[in-house]
Image 1: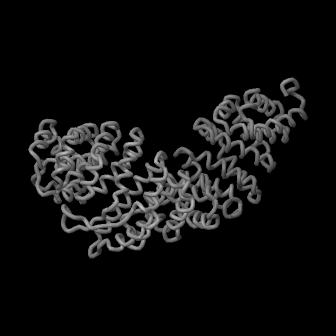
Image 2: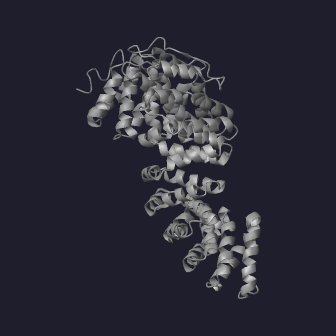
Image 3: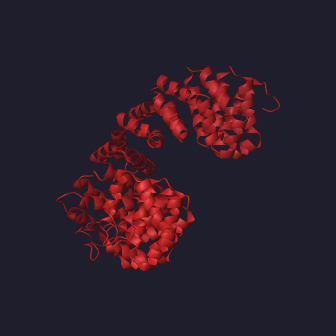
Length: 548
């Protein structure tokens, strides 16, 4: 090919040979100059459909390697691929190859995705899918390409606006037995569902029903189950309508079943934990809460099984935090008790670590009934995750969130967390991530919950530097209402001893907290803070109700 660059037949055969070899030996082909030769053939023979087809096939296989993908872009490969697609719109085989190449290039780097978007790759994919609706290979490659493109918010919005969700849903419905196409479809739907427009679009296109139907049809297909959990989690995030539709259609059962069947797949366990975390809502019915509580054992089991899998622990901490919060929400329903939740938790027999539930002992406020895992493995796992992954901001954020919820109005849990080293984990997270607003917010909230009406914890948090950390957080985020609420709560909870009162005054916390309360908090924020402060036995900073 190098010696006879204008030998048309040789270039045609050379491209197909290089493409076939690149499927297994992409680096070898690239190292001998294969990328340059393929692109050169496309440049020399722009009107030869066979050469363009074979070259796109070769580029698709070569693009699977990140470094090679970059070299293709530098050689101008993206422009030639898209030009070929536009030059021969009626050649279905060439369209199959170009969409395959687009998918391969998009999957390797953000730079490639930006270039492809700028060169109208989305239009090429859409035109092909609409023109060749019955071609299974083309639809398969296009789903792959769309899923690979949908990795930044701008691309996701463009795909939604162009009708990409409808293209993929239609392809999945037309080829319900093509497992690879379905996996690619799940990838694309899950990626676009990470943004608001995508969640709405997938739901309107019948995506919830389609996803659950597909998971039910392929219970033994691990990639489909894994991707299905991922999609359902994104669809349920911050969307009550989708959440309710998923649970009513059996999505919760599908997720828990997948966790049970594929216990050795950490990625699936993480995706399932993400889904379960997003299924939890204050608007869940009692029946749904009962079903969700049964997933607690699966989350604990996954965290125990994969002690070094960061995503399992990041999402497991989030799920546990939300599940504990769900118990608090149930207590807030007038005239109801959490008996159903307690019963469900007792039935978690698949996980030996979760043994039983007991009512809260000393320190319960207003007769609230709280839930305590007697084995406390949920708490221990969260603390262990924070210790094991000290540089993972997501784990620290979710760990602070979970510990705060475990300790909320729960004397026994608060004492257990303190004795297990949880205070040290919280303060370390706040020290290591001073510019991470959510960690500071969650950390202060957790310290406040631990200290509330718990004298020993008040002492321990004060000695661990919790007061200084809370004040530092408020200085770092002087205009953040969530941080201000958490800091004011923490400082007031900690202010019950003379030693801590001195610490608060010495570091300027008294003036700073009062100023934040009245200068930053909205009326709603003041009401939220006052609801917390009203549970304390005494006050030092805010002696009068802040909401008045």
